[in-house]
Amino acid sequence: MPNASTQHPAQRPKAVVIGAGFGGLASAIRLSVKGYDVQVLEKLDAAGGRAYVHHQDGFTFDAGPTIITAPFLLEELWALCGKRMRDDIDLIKMSPFYRIRFYNGETFDYSDDTEAMCREIAKFDARDIPGYHRLMKAADQCKRLGFEQMGDVAFDSYMDLLKALPAFIKMRAWKSLYSLVAENIKHPLLRVAFSFHPLLIGGNPYSVTRAYALIHSLEKTWGVHSPMGGTGALIKGLVDLLAHLKVPIRYNAAVKRICIENGRACGVELEPVDRAQSSALPLNPHQPSEPTERIDADIVVCNTDSAWTYKYLIAPEHRRHWSDARIERGHYSMGLFVWYFGTNRTYPQIPHHMMVLTERYKALLHDIFKKHHLSEDFSLYLHRPTATDPSLAPPGCDTFYVLAPVPNLDSHTDWPRISESFRQSIQEHLEAILLKDLGQHIVTSKVTTPLDFQNRLYSYKGAGFGLEPLLTQSAIFRPHNRSEDIPGLFMVGASTHPGAGVPGVLMSAKALEKVIPHA
Image 1 (cartoon, rainbow, N blue to C red):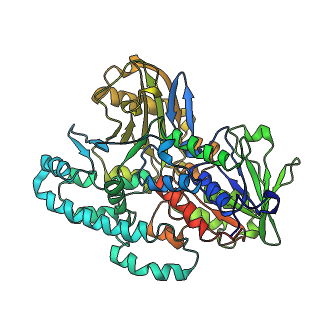
Image 2 (tube, rainbow, N blue to C red; image 1 turned 60 degrees about the horizontal axis):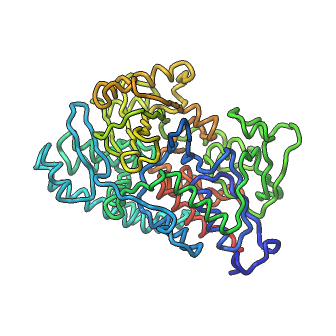
Image 3 (cartoon, rainbow, N blue to C red; image 1 turned 180 degrees about the vertical axis):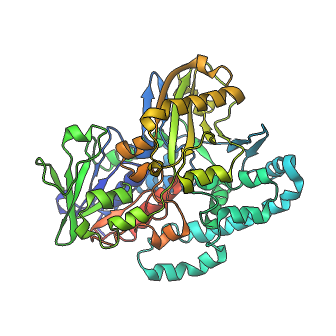
């Protein structure tokens, strides 16, 4: 196959990649190395997508993903470019991975150290130690069958599904992750500690397939890491790799419409620059409007929310599978309320990653995922990256973000009206249990809500992770990496196969390689 180094750009087929998140950047690297002339289009003013970086008053805030596992998937991208990731990125392994604080003040430090984990379990009930070993054995099987064997399979046809059925059966994938934990762990708080992980990828532990026990094994096998400089350092590293490959990224370039001619994707039309730079929702792409710029391409790769892409960027007559009705029937992940704040003092007692949980576990998840109701209580993920990298804040200061899972926009929550009072409730809760006199020490603050995910990131219903990772919305039942509807159109990222989380998104770019035309 011709490659980027031997083929003149004028002779190479052209690929347009929409979106410069992890999936788009990884896809652009793989496409370029495979011989495509690639251009990346990004709606925002910088790369990252959900992993965008906010700089405010001397503080650096990673907007989204902060837990990095399976780093070999990133190392592959550097290797494809003839480089070594360790020359550019300093990854620090967390120990412990994170601390879980329960409503009663008890804590559980979660790590990959089996002996330490057994000691933590014994603090609650030593009789659950054998169950922990059984659970990790099941998680190892799920990793082997679900991640290693199927993660980069594109599930392009029902034959792919038939080949995978034995693995699904071995994992008993039709049962929930929580049920697997409950079969092995009896103490109620330990059941919480070993079942909350799907929330990191937008799933309800009581609903998602137990195949997601693989997260336990991913973390134990490869660890949980944080890059010095924050997750944004990884994004910058990928952007630098594309510069090395001479792949341009065009910012403030929001796509208005995917062009389809003779039934095939053949390029994109862009929103006017003033709209691309605004937070307004896009105009109806199927109605006449002012002239727009068109970029032609042989293939179009979308690192965008799949539901949004099909509903708003592609005319209905081209969508046999992903009709408006099917999109609306989908079950979407929860929304995210994220409060970024900086303090003029440090809180050394707070670890890098911490889960702060409410007494209501199942009921709160039911409110979020089933009732689409914003409750007065909340469970929180508290992120203090300056525990590892003090450079992310001014001297003597701390950088934080706190994330609360909330309903997506199906809740009809009036976020402009209530976001400040909700933030204040979170602040008061943290002041009461962890961060004494917090309000006196906050020197910078920023909030994002599900409405921002919709308006800024074009996430359907403001869902933080696209379709919820239910069994009936996984593998072949999830939007395909090669569009079922339109030749020449491809999907990567959290809302396509295999799903959300940095490893899943990077695996989607690997799956793409198996279905793109040869350059």
